[in-house]
Image 1 (tube, helix red, strand yellow):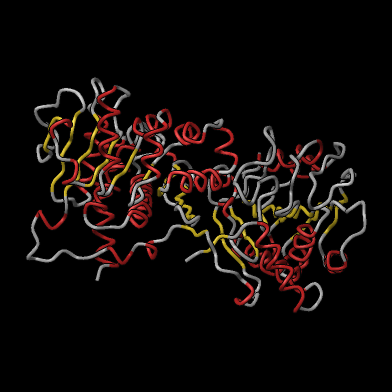
Image 2 (cartoon, helix red, strand yellow; image 1 turned 135 degrees about the vertical axis):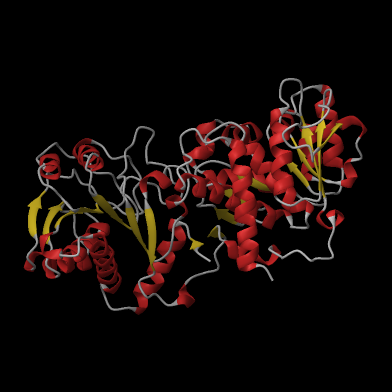
Length: 519
């Protein structure tokens, strides 16, 4: 399982490793790893490859200089755009610079970086850097401008340089983190900031959450991890992970021939206020195709006589249904009426599996007694907010949620005693204990109405079959994204994919997973 570490944790690991290794060993290993990753991206005949290496003023620049030397020795035509530090350079960076200078790499010294360090943004004055970037047919650009310590947005000449790199059509390899990206949060540094859009990132020591959520997914590209041969004993237990089938595989069980519909639980989807019948039907269909034995679509207003597209669903009025007999998914198309609030209060008061989505979340945000009742449940509920719903629950701007999605999800999970699924690019799943998982399946095809309803029903279907809340949330988010990935790979998106198309793809993915992982 791929562990994720914060910048502070990685700094501590780096410090501990450096104390027991020869001087400069970590930088040398990072440079070699970066060069190996670059060589894998270059044409078969390295001698004809043109590589531009961007070496910033700090230790990330030192990693880039080491990589440049290795690439030059391997026969690539390497040009180094070098931003020297204005202050004292570290000994290991100075040694890396010397190795690069005695190689066949060609150097272009950049303009003054205005005192930039590895923890400050370069400003500087405009020079010929953009012309160098745009003036050759590069096979690869290696980004070693800034590492994990960047605090301020890129401005001036450095901003222009990054913008020029982002206009190129070639592959871009980021060393550790794309320059301009916050490694902890996945946000581009600064409200109007820029960051390198890499096609690949080779990240050092350990994986970082910011590479997998929010804007990080648009900037990091394919992520590989080089642990730099650091002793495993120096890594503390991780509280964050990348979502993986291994995290929920124990619940993927083949069905017994002697089973029946009662073996697989009931799901009741509660919603369907006037004019919003589609949302609960999507959720109910997803629960059915996920394998729940019986699925009810419960309407807060007048129920439909049936779902003509899925007659296996049972359409009922929500007020007369015994909510203790099913795993509950409440919120899709629920509305904000007093009847909706009453149903939500009843659902929260029960002891069974509960997932709250959409309008249910808005009612909880606006109603302190519902919030208190939710936090006091014996069995934590699953909450599936999108960023705006999360902002309402946290009583903060949406921008604050997106600025640190991991922190926002953790705050919600702790304050509401719930498993929180903060939807969006790189969905964040957080437990009340502080554990966090970031999901890497899925794509922009999911940015369409109804996909959240499908996710809610999918998770409810897993809970009805006995999956604990945490594993159900992990499995549902992973399957939901994988279905979208498969559909896009088959040409059915991302443009124009509809939520209903996900449902049969989810069923196929789940059955294949059971065949492969089930016991």
